[in-house]
Amino acid sequence: MTILYFAPIYYNDMKQRPQQIAECLAKKHKVYYVEPTVSLMRWLLKGGRTFAGMRQMVSDNLTVLRLNGCLTVHKSIEILDLCGVNSLSELWQLRRLIRECDLVWTGYSGWYPLIRHWKHVPVLFDKMDEEAMLVSSRLWRMTLKRNQRKILHMADIVTVTAVQFYEERKAKKKKAYLIPNAVSDSFVSGIGAHGVSFGRLGKAKAFGYIGTIGEWFDEAVIEKLLELDSEYEIYLAGRNYRHPILHPRVHYLGILENEKLPALLETFDVCLYNFKKSPLLSTINPVKIYEYLALNKPVLAVTSKETLRFQDYLALYEDVEEIADIIRHGFCRPFKDAQSHRQFLLQNSWAARTEQIEQILREEVFGR
Image 1 (cartoon, rainbow, N blue to C red):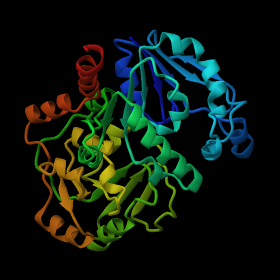
Image 2 (image 1 turned 135 degrees about the vertical axis):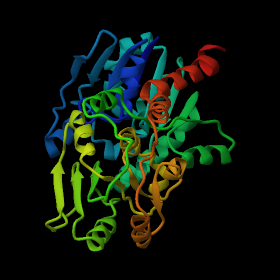
Image 3 (image 1 turned 180 degrees about the horizontal axis):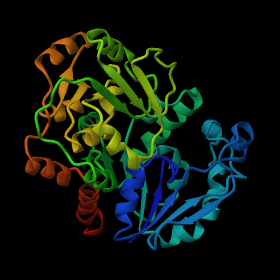
Image 4 (image 1 turned 180 degrees about the vertical axis):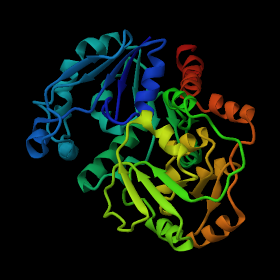
């Protein structure tokens, strides 16, 4: 099978769901991973990645493409393109693959103006987040909302990461498959050198967080931890878009390579998932939770529809004031033995998730 995979992120960015699934699919199928197009207008305004096209052979079955954007306009004004002229250049560049592909796969509704032309092959839409909540441009929010409605209508298969999305589709009597996120094989391999502890946990002193720090990051949790004990040290690893917390016991580690994360997490006594309560929270199925649990680390996490699914493994709080009680009772490791830990890893691998989706395709699309 030849799969045209329209991705929401660049292949060489921090590895997330799109790259993980594309790589798993490429073990059996031919996959063309199409990166977001950089328009000439965007490049002139912001610089960065070139608007020129690019082709990279990652393996025999996985090719990364970036289409030339010299004839496309900035996506934020695409809502004004009523005739679909902005996608013509991209269509021309993909004309051979239009004829050859057996499946179109996308995780981003920004690709709808292009994908709507694929009426002869099945389309799978992998709804990963509420895209309109993550952008600041009003025009682009309107565009994404419009595109998502249309792509949800045209898709032959809809997969979703979060219970919230699944329930919304069910309420509308629309079919969707819940396929959560997972932990990567490379992350699990990185654990091997450091091992996973199943022993008793002593007094927690080092609290750590990995991931982007944005407006969703609840700094009140950090302040509460600093207030509770003068020995607590806080370590924050990832890109920071907020004003840093200026405190001698708060340490910003910056962006780290994925291979270095298991070793870093091993130094934390307790891992943090401290997002603010907001409509966005219940739409996030956090990869970091899977990574924390893969190392059998105690996790202090805000309660949401998604973290409730892990409630047997996490220390959950509704309000920051509950954290003192949680700490007073002490933290426990999520898994008591190697067998239950290994079972969690097998059930929550990207290979397992991809196999679930392939089974759906066999039953719902190609087995008809």
